[in-house]
Image (cartoon, rainbow, N blue to C red; front, top):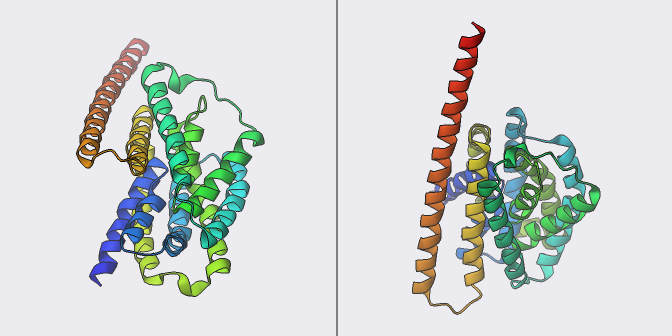
Length: 301
């Protein structure tokens, strides 16, 4: 019972991160299961089984708060589902750990790009929306879905920053859309694992625990996305990308742990400073907009 409660809390925390930032549920939950000694394929299968329910709850919550671009979601679902099914089948027979290194380098670069764009481009939120075609959505959906299933998580970390890096994309819409489409991805991955591994290899107790925590957290996370300023969301997403992928890259190096911890601390401190700076800036902008609104109302009256 104690383990069930702990896993439920982990599922709750993972869904808060995933629902609010568009990434993190699969990676957080899978990491816990792997730490406990569960085989990669079984861990990923259990997490994706839980995600079928949690992503449905998260998707409905985001739709309720108006965080979803339905056209974008439709274009992501089919290639994402095909990629997830392929990734699940692949992982069931083979695990390629070094593939994560290249993905982590790619994600780190995207995280830094997003951070720079939202910090230094003053008109980032007013840029004209760039219409994307299937040439962009098809490979993005397939690659994100494949790595999500084969790596135990990756739909959000790949799809969210790739979409945010496009001009005129609104972070809350990107996060909500990625969360909605993840339901189809999780269902396809689960089907792939069932056909390759069989139902008996899924840890139903662990899947149920993280599923319960995720369902509870879904509406809270959607509300966070609705409430936080655009620039703040982008900075949080990029900071999480930089930190998690630097850690993943260090796992393939021989850098001493002491130096790694120093670098982790430096990244966190810089991230906290940037978040504080952006929060102060958003507060001043809000105050200025409020003052301007009061001035206009006084002039009209």
